[in-house]
Length: 149
Image 1 (cartoon, rainbow, N blue to C red):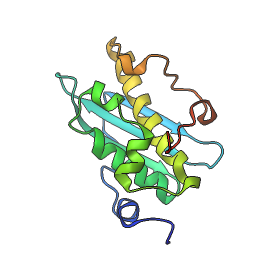
Image 2: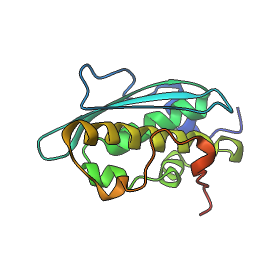
Image 3: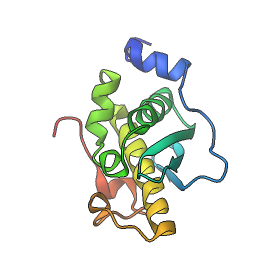
């Protein structure tokens, strides 16, 4: 247990925003075939392009659950453009750090959020600078972000 700090453990043991939004404005699913972690993020977006709610369902390790939990907290109340600026490094920092072997969990959360926003944009004919070049179907190996960038 010593590999996880108190904040990671708190988000793992008491995750926030667990569940699924009924009739979401955007739905993003992402998983890693390497480790088996799977994430789903659903979002509600109000008329001002503000994410008013976000929920997650994650099948995976404690780091994956904690990353999903803190990431949803970080995007609620943000505009879509602000949420698109979220990076896996910011998720790691908000958690107070993750072990190197668990960094990919923050990448999964980041990708699932961008996938949910991509879905929202596609459904509503919107374009966002933060989605330029984004591929919701990219494999994890195609976008390995690291904590030390």
